[in-house]
Image 1 (cartoon, rainbow, N blue to C red):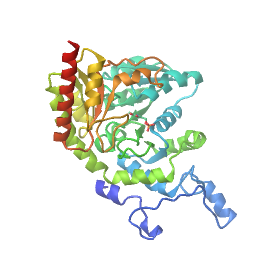
Image 2 (image 1 turned 90 degrees about the horizontal axis):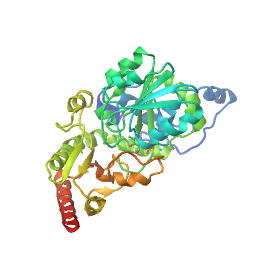
Image 3 (image 1 turned 60 degrees about the horizontal axis):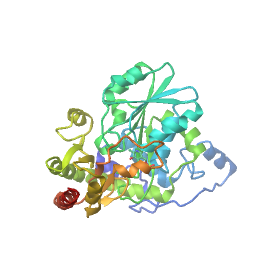
Image 4 (image 1 turned 135 degrees about the horizontal axis):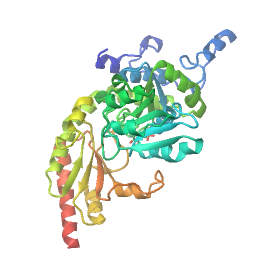
Length: 395
Ligand SMILES: Cc1ncc(COP(=O)(O)O)c(C=O)c1O
């Protein structure tokens, strides 16, 4: 199926809603039946037909079809947040007494789930450096049931060689789950590489407009049915029809937005890499990145997130730089139309961490949105000058 058809038409049955081009928001919690028999049949098939919106909603159903197809998966479930999706994916794969091997420094609340929450239910996790697939093998214990991947991972954007990690998992009958939010389904399709469960924070690229929080889980039909019957229906972190509709609208421009970012972000990275006040840039698609070849092998195009280590003597200089930016907004998240920065020092007081994260105070995560690269580079230039001024003041 070609991408344009998938995005514009697939899953939409317009003759069922007055041939309207855009699908309706079926804002209903429940659905009515003509007979007890029809009601009985519907409840027996709650994942696939309208009965009660926690299980199935026609607007969400269109979205599920498109998202599954985008990831090359048989089935998809949509959640109220990315962390609801990853929690469901992880919790559905383990039980008390099991062990998980996870890439180190995943998204903060994923780490918290693995290191702080699941141990209360008798599930232990070992966090490893995932840049070498053999580290997954070395961490396997007789009770290891799951590998958790996030490639690239959060903030420092190290990658895992996905097919190599999958091969090790399969040798040991271990399930694999990956957070694919960084790349979006446009740039990386882990199911094609053998991963069992793919999840996304749809609050990022899939929504694309910084106006919704949602999560996506794609897998085989069998696995999704199992998750539907347990974590999905029991924990109940479902998406509502209005947010589903917003995500459908976001998807219409997903390929265009990713293409634009693939053109812009490397230019901004190149400018920063050559600036005297920049120590280092962490970007998978930078030719100086030690994993550049892997990035090209498993991701189709560059995305918009990277981190920058500034040459600063004091945190005030980093703050001056961040406060001085006009186009890059100081805000969390990423994946919308607007460029953003997130200084690491903000995380030192974050609730997600039980101890301060191992990230230097002069590290800033960037997200390049849809602005012109020249405008963003000028913005960076002027803010770096402000930082230079602050440095002179200190001396
Ligand atoms: C890589 C990654 N995964 C998952 C999440 C969680 O997603 P949500 O905020 O939609 O729950 C985030 C959120 O920032 C993230 O950056």
